[in-house]
Image 1 (cartoon, rainbow, N blue to C red):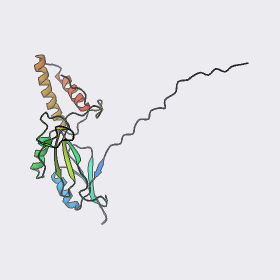
Image 2: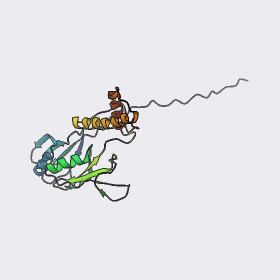
Image 3: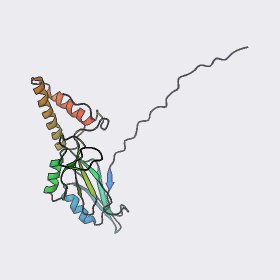
Image 4: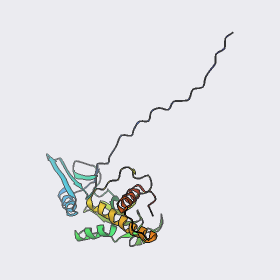
Length: 218
């Protein structure tokens, strides 16, 4: 009588499919008066990309905030949402006080800078004392009441940015990163008591790690 042997075979994992990039392109905000909204966002210094009109029922205006990969749309026939119902849309800045000062100079009614000492606590006056990322804010609204929240971010939380993909959306942001790296490098030289000839490499490592949310070089 013959016998049959059964051999256990390792399970094969299904091939991993690379996630398709889905880049947030546009946020639609509801407004009551298209021309009034256009004047307001133009006054912010945002780039006007388009103002398309098709008949009496459709018009779309597109603006892009300075240095942003994402734009906004408003107009006629583009959304059924109530004007002013878009709330707390985030605008990330590298220097909250400079960003607020620019808005004030442009005539925008913007709140004072504030911070929160802990999650759940009420706002406290002024920027975060330690200027920690994600902790300093200011707010403003457009003429319809759609509200915007400025948030200061200089270093991302771990995992939020691909360490192999260090990018800057404007020369100003790159310059700000270089200034932070220069200040940190100055402290590094004070600790070591030596001039670092390899400072370009040190700067580069600092900037890449800061964007990726990794521990910074000391």
